[in-house]
Length: 463
Image (cartoon, rainbow, N blue to C red; front, side, top):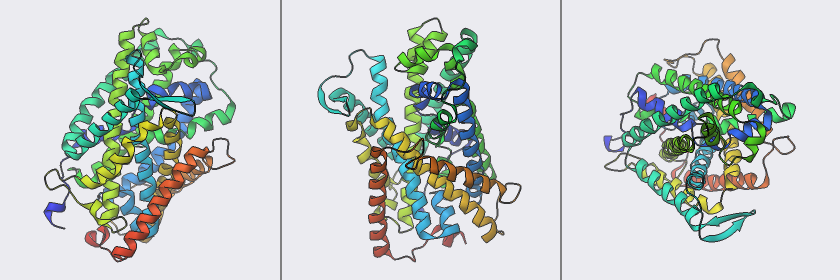
């Protein structure tokens, strides 16, 4: 591969950590924390995030070993290809790309939701109504303009993206620490009751939301070719980012539930912002500061998943599993610009679906992520047997045991999404999954027919 078609190796420790943590901590903690607490009780929600966190940590450990052993763009694509071959590799990568795309579309819908909180009578110019929700010109317009801006930042290069992500991540951390300390001081344990709500069904209903909240650590392996660090460090940073996110979500649940009882949570539009205001004596200014951090979270997550999604598409195109043009790099910025546009165009239209689409994207996208995680865990187990000689700078102890735990847990969560389960997906989510699968199948069949199966792959270069 000539140097014109190589990604730039420019990311350092703080860039990588901000990219992964910023991608994980999107907007969900501002808008859905109330749903977690009322859905499972305060301690039930904490327990759900511990279960989700253990799953993500185990999966993250398998990723960490593979990312340090095979540091190539497209993460999942490279590991599953080496372990299971061409078609499984496409399925895993297309599934994670669906997860990334759904987060990107989610953030485009979330952005105008924030403006509603800050600006009175923001939503003007009624267009139409979807499932009882009015879509307006100002509402959809803000989401679409935000989407275009984020696509442009990504188009301009990874260093620019990571700098903006780092600054915004600091803002999020300051707001979160203020909420947690304020909630601890001003709140009380009585507000936290009921500790558990709706028993196991309540906990599982929150568990299936956790993959969407934790997805983002896997942006590190997607951008592996752009990281300028020792291979072992890549694995360590990945695990550290997951631990940080688990602690973050549990602390937010704790802070909110100490300040607001379930009744107050049910009456609130933006629970975390109202909890912040309540923790500081009803200060609307503090509430708005938290919303500002929430906007920071929307932007970091949005930026991070563009990196993940575009690098996954770029890797598939380079391997001849998607049209070749999607694997081209911009001559000046060295970004996969056509892959970025492929994500930008449909996700910029997402705000036209209105606010109900938030739930569709969370639940539908979650399934894509967990399927990919399951396939990476299986690849980890296979590669330990199939390629024992492969150099693993970050090697997990205990043979394949962590991989088995990760695979069993991920498989269990995949089952929770299925019809007939207490937390199964709705019709809208299955339609999204079906459409994405259909588009993938058409592009894969077309590309395989055009370029053949014996296309050069990273493993051929890596030996």
